[in-house]
Amino acid sequence: MSGFAHYLPDIWAAIIAFAIMTYVVLDGFDLGIGILFPFLGSDENRTRAMNSVAPVWDGNETWLVMGGGGLLAVFPLAYGVILNALYVPIIIMLLALAFRGVAFEFRGKTRRWKPLWDKAFFGGSLVATLAQGAILGGLLRGPEVTGRTFTGGPLDWVSFFSLGTALALVAGYIMLGAAWLVIKTSHDLYDRARRVGEWSLIITLGFIGLASLATPFLHPEYFQRWFAWPGIILSAVVPLLLLAAGYGYWKGIRSDRGVMAYLSGIAIFVLCFAGLGLSIFPYIVPMSITIREAATPPISQGFILVGAVIFLPIILAYTAYAYYVFRGKTSEHEHHY
Image (cartoon, rainbow, N blue to C red):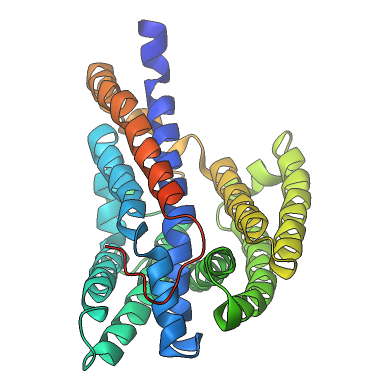
């Protein structure tokens, strides 16, 4: 048991990383659709776009809760530091997601106030995405920690790098949203989504390139990991894989293969996530607190792991089932809640 206990922090770090990554690629496409809302043309197009995500959007956010809950339960020290350092963008994100959730419920039940809820859906999606990107940028820059306590200020996360990661995530979510609309819609909305997908891919890859150039210079250890052996192998391979995934998205979005485009978009995010892992592992608060320093006692981790082993497959199963049940094209008149 002692040997297994040694690896419990790594197992939990992998589970939390999986939950966050799953949230990004699943909730990312419906946030992207919300950002595109004002640019979809007719009210019919907007209704069809919302109906395409209505059956699954709230289930997608389960993964955000799981990631945050797992961080609190298993790495409470890191949870406290990260929330203290980033509570401003985190609160903004949660409020924006709440506005967006209300818009889902109210838009289909009113005619007079529909323009208001359209704006709430767009604004909530955009602000939540910008906040998530700012959280990523602020975390990568590394909160100021003395001992085991955050000693920085509430706006330390604000920087040009955080602005860049925020805009990059907007472009990336639009890319996923466009692929989803190609899968789920037809006619004018389908054509619009294909055009949006093309330029959003180019912008996303451009931002990824800029972030890849800037990240190694945020901290000397990042530079060492990216350009010293064996990290330099990944530094050489990952850009090639990104180009391959980008080509897959481009080919899929231009040839009526929305599933191929969406899976390629997921591959782009996964590769970026792998680069993030290369930069910060084994730290959970970059360059300050490792996963083992932040972890609870092994007996607590093992107890919680039993629940994760039981419920994680259940969550995966009902998520897959929901997507299977609501497969196919979406019409204007369907309204799933």
